[in-house]
Image 1: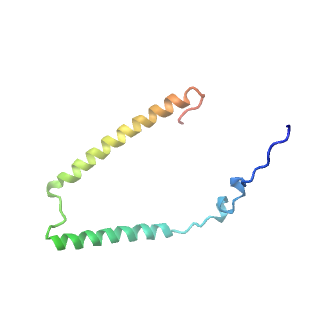
Image 2: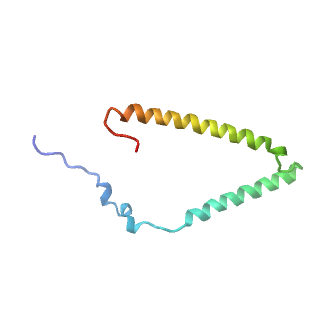
Image 3: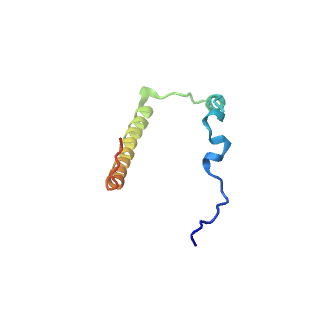
Length: 97
């Protein structure tokens, strides 16, 4: 009963991809990201032309409304995150910093 049961899983540090010097440091993900952005812009422009509706936001009203909603959402989520870490980690003697 004093022996521990053997594990079948390898440790995470034994995985070759876990080593920093063996990771791919290329920027392939950047090209894929910009490909999606260009594809989205092309589809938006094509649909806008097909429907005869220009891509515009008079006086920036839609942008300002969405920006305000995003900022409120960010503040609310940030406050909840702060409360969560304050009340769950404070008793353990750790801090956020």
